[in-house]
Length: 460
Image 1 (cartoon, rainbow, N blue to C red):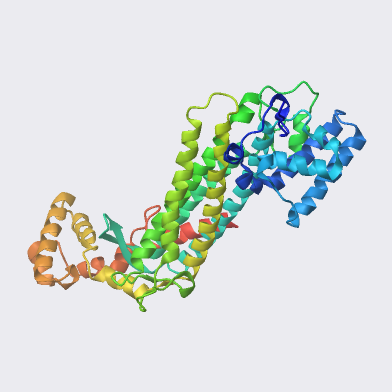
Image 2 (cartoon, rainbow, N blue to C red):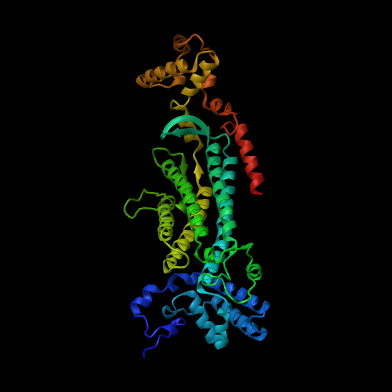
């Protein structure tokens, strides 16, 4: 009779084919969790010793072997094979080679189902802290840039048309707020990630007198899953992470889109540093915003990671299914993509040059002060709807005459409405328009300074 030499092969009479073995293996990617797997095993054997399930000398021997594997992993000396399928069986096989058959006792009261879930919780918990710190570092750059540009004027846009003049700092602080919401979403995600599935075993718990709270404490988890079926089949914490990543990348992509536009010859509001730009192989004059474009492009990649796992999960019965093998690559990819994107974007924003004169010039050669004239007339007692219509008609005449509102003579203004006096030109000044908007959250300089001060205090 043929034999199956897999660690799970006792019930089988034949080996899987080489192609099936390769197709079913996950070691190609789940080796990224080798450190977490060893960490989880050390906590598990400590619990087995603590509860008396394993004799002290056996537990100590296993612990010493696991520490030896940790040293070899750090030195890059561990070799993994497809024949051992995944990171769990690879490390168990390596441990057996290290300390002999006693290694087999490590798997007492444990399944690969709760083992892999534990690994993913540990891996994601570590990277959540990293992502959150990277968001904070980006926010610091945003706030520093805003603090230097409180009185930098630029056109504010709706429908990509000049709408009203605003402060560039006001624009930047809008992204600070977006990133703050991103941070808070990851913070909430951490609550669901910081719990231990270890001890749920395959799906139903175990007959051994384990202490799940003890192993959770060893691993630094704040909580344990209360239901063993849920513990091994839950991937909500990864879905939350991917959803949060998708929103964060969307915010970065919007920011990148504006940087790309504003770095063009047509706008010339910004100039990217050479260190975050590339050239053309054929056009020697080119300076391309490739890093901003890459981040914008990678946003779709992270969206795909989210949709992929949602699709995997949508029809899975409880508890564990082999489909769950597809839960890792998207998580790894999103972690790498988001961490790299945040790092590159932070440097790109920190080193770009703001062309303040060009921004300010754009607010004096447009009609973004039309609302100021309408408000001016409304403050003089004219119903706003009538003021809106009068100003709209005047803007049309100015366009036809190739001039702006500041170029209209006082006599022509007074012919439009006797309510208009010489102070109208002060009202039309973009700086006045911005400075006067002191409503809570507005673009007025005093309001922006309050936003920046509050942000600085929070970031400490």
